[in-house]
Image 1 (tube, rainbow, N blue to C red):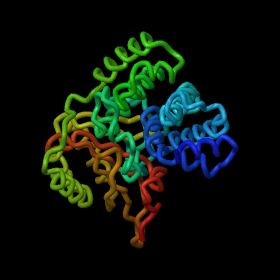
Image 2 (image 1 turned 180 degrees about the vertical axis):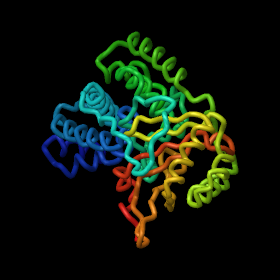
Image 3 (image 1 turned 180 degrees about the horizontal axis):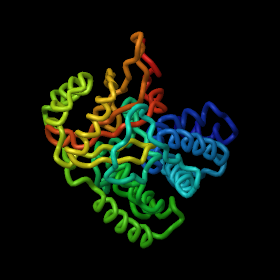
Image 4 (image 1 turned 135 degrees about the vertical axis):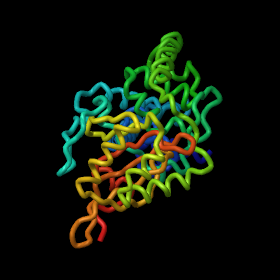
Length: 328
């Protein structure tokens, strides 16, 4: 009855009633937009577009589907428009002064990737997805999974997320995308194959010693101890640095890369945080006079008691984690 009253008021232009109706879904919609777009900034912008479109079109909402489903329909189609746009975040050049980059193993395609702060995952309503969901929520927010989604065609991404992550029924997804059930099933089959093909071989749950591994990483990184760092890495460890496209694969190459960084005299302090359900750190470069300048955010991917990947993001993402640009 309360919801019906709020809906009736919202249809007459009551902004407070509209906010009361939609606020419970905003955080999960933000996560949805992030999964589809891979960029936290783009997800925030698309969420605002979604809410504006919902507000403008609320008078036409007849309640045939739930409000949540209706909002997901709008958000998904706004994300599809954004995925098709040409204005994605471009790749940037090497930005580490005094360090000549090694020849990378390859150049990454998803240079617009950004981390998602764990603080915004708390209380997300889609923590209990529909019965047809196939992915655990922890995997479905991981950097590896979100990156794999970015390499799929936009429509396949939408179908996979709506069906296998959120657990919407095939007929519901068909309605959201103005499509048919057969078309949804076909797109889902291709999307599953695409994600499976790009799934990391070393993917797996972290062990009970996660805290110890993370503490050892901090000690090794802050003391520039390459030897100690190497003992924490898997043989096929992977390092990426969006929006720089450089990617390094393999313990020896990654060890050499880190040695180059430390060999240039760069020393860091790390401030712990969490991103995408994974351990993360704000990285601050020590400078003369004691001031430490934020250089970015590191996100670690753990496989058992080893680090299987490290993703370094530039300092533009620090504010999203409530981290300052510099430390005294």
